[in-house]
Length: 447
Image (tube, rainbow, N blue to C red; front, side, top):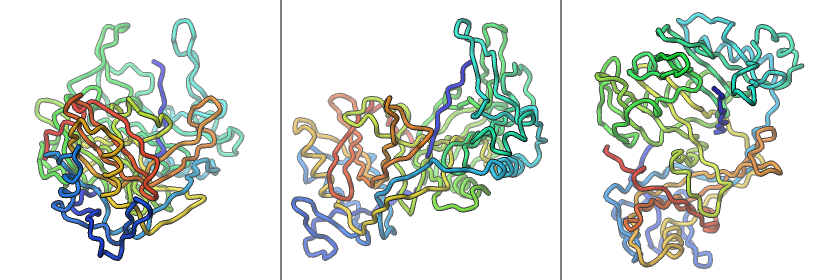
């Protein structure tokens, strides 16, 4: 099995918003055809937002309209984020071990399952058979070279299921964290969901069912999807130990993940965007949290993997795809990506942005007049555009990104069953772009 490694560098829903057309509001001013508003005045009722939407002939209000914008932000930023950070390997080594002890306090550590990648360590496959002929080095065999820096910057992977054919479950865990810690890339799996799940992997070669490798296990691929809910939903499902409401589970998760001990200095946090419910077995459900980063009160755009198809005109735009899974009410079982640090360079801050009315006006004018789009969601987010190599790939060796605030307007088109995800630069009203995705992916059976 060849592992495809994806590097992830990287909420409270509110019911108030900006954009009313009150010309006497001193916080707003016209810049050409664009109306501006102070960040201190981002407030309007749902009724006012509804009036704005209805004022455009090709817009209507969706029955599931949600508005997600912070009301207590005083400034917003455009900046370059630099993630090519030098790291002391001795510090990374000690912090990784401290994280292990924090996450798995009752699970003994076995250095036979601690590997690293980077430097001289790599997975090598036979081009003809696809069989693994060289695995990652074990840290214990190269510890001196790692600590001294001779191996350069490397990442640790601890996985007790790594390349093992486990047909009878035994308690196993996985911990993989990017270097440095806290900038997004992380995989944590405590094995509880895998243990409780009815589904296993059928291995044709072994002619048997076996348990998956924890590092590459995604509950979304093996469990039955039930419904999607907003993070503030009061709907309850029975987890392995007891029922817990979705909103309470979200509160527990956000407190848990943002309290992880490393990095020691934090200026960002992880927040939940949506919650998908899955059935783990006949008696047990689990909450799959879709997560992103929040910086200075404004979160980064999150897009489901299935929604990222069909980009129109901005193929180099990147969205965050963090997630976590909770199968017990007082613990987090699986984690993909967490965000606690953000580096800012070439920073420009603003106290004003364009109003919702101006953003919607631009979207309305750019889209066809022959369709009445249902406005499903309105958000204020940070968007990011990663630096690329000459070949057009994200530059993982010297990673950086241009960060820009944007209004994000999500609309449904009933004629083609597509959802249109539109973006407008929140600072100047320019750089309109959109992508489309099947509306079926957006169906929300929850509250």
